[in-house]
Length: 97
Image 1: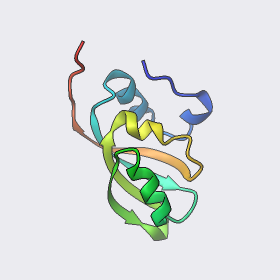
Image 2: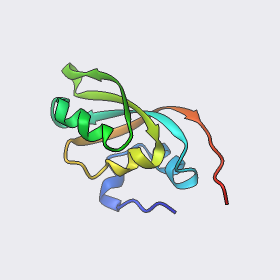
Image 3: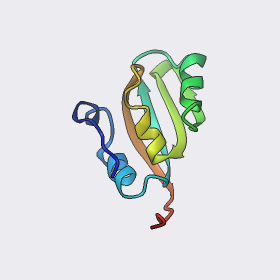
Image 4: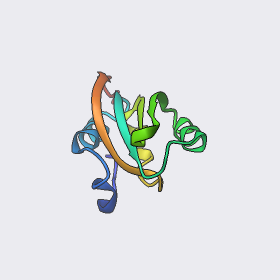
């Protein structure tokens, strides 16, 4: 099961945590609220986690991304991440045992 540090749980929608723990490869859309304006450096950092940046709202410090739940959880410890909320579950892929 995917472990998430207790201090990082306050930075993410509980539904993303539940999805990442039950089916980490499920693709979701999420909204990332950043603590800094979304620069190209921030966007490049997100893309390194195989997240597709769908839209940037610079005036609100918000980036809309699409990717696997486990990859979205992986960015929680980045200093520019203030909060991540679930927008939509795209695909529910069954885990292979």
